[in-house]
Length: 324
Figure 1 (cartoon, helix red, strand yellow):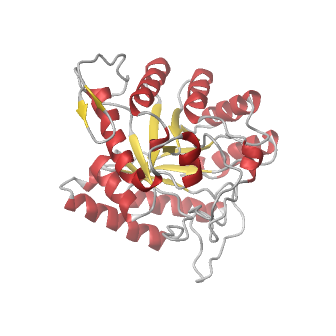
Figure 2: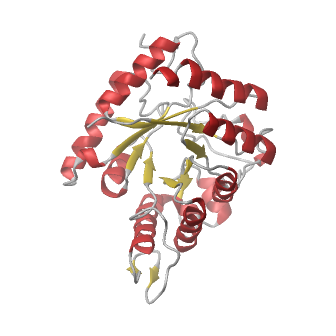
């Protein structure tokens, strides 16, 4: 069956562009240029002192300048705002740290936005990486984040799908309740599992509708076509072990380093980082990813200014996506 690819990018949740006018302009420009996925990162509180635990830098240090001073817009609130200002694009948490929010309220917030947006929410889920933020917001223990994430995802599904939801878990129990409105999307909004580790792959195989890694994790790099192809083989093998049809798991991917055509990035081992280089090279890579089964592909067009960001969105759509 022919795979239809969808494309998208992240919208700002921190820094100078995290204001309503810029967010609306960037989101609407994306829709106008044919992008169908708008991604929103998650932080609630940025502690003043953070250990070297960040998974996407080689030294473990948080390297997002947009979070300097602790500014970060809450993603579910931002999802609602973006949904109100757009018409067709799906809005994705990329990714929401599941243990940060009480699961029944989270399920109701996403269900409400799905209801009001006509079914345009995607819940990207992750277990989290920053113990200081877990402590600051009073989340369950960082050491239990994997178990908490699994249980909360099961709760979302129960609340969204069951006529008379009930649940008996280690962290939450409920019964004899109504839960309405249900999401517009049936059986529920897609749940994308972020992460590159074997634990994330297993969570995707057991509980996800999509596996959604970022390629630049130094511990589990998926930044070249051979590395990503091998990882796809691994996650499909895990699906087999879980008695799940591997073809039922959507493959999504976020290339956070791709914002335009240009010179290729050559890695330390001499391999070219995928989705870098000329427009034709990026087009070829997109075709290869499609052949591997990838149907959702996100990029990163954020620049210092709104005007440059809008230019990148349009140029990439014209020079590359229009030719895919």
